[in-house]
Image 1 (cartoon, rainbow, N blue to C red):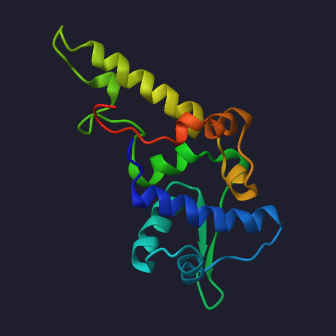
Image 2: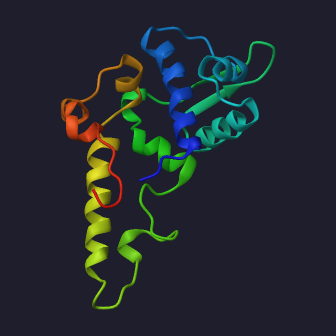
Length: 159
């Protein structure tokens, strides 16, 4: 799985915004402030914030004291929701969802591999919320996976 810069930046910006929500700070956050805080290119961030607004995750306020704030409870927004909002489906094969891929009889087993991989990703990405990220506390199953030493080991072809 490759995580795009767009998804990574979206989640980093949302952590900044959600931390305010968690601490009951009602103020909006400017794109400039988000850009500086997370080292995200401002122009790229503007497009990401617009995608998140269209998805109903953020709302914007115009004017001198304008900026961005959550439009929904961050306990209800998962990492998967954010990734889908900015990048589309979590798993696709050449732009096609795994359940729609057509293979010949010798390769059809691959479809089940892609479906299983998607289920595994969902197990982590759909159970981790913006609030979890903002508080730095992952769900138990995700935390357990992240503490597995083998998970930290890079794999190279042939190993």
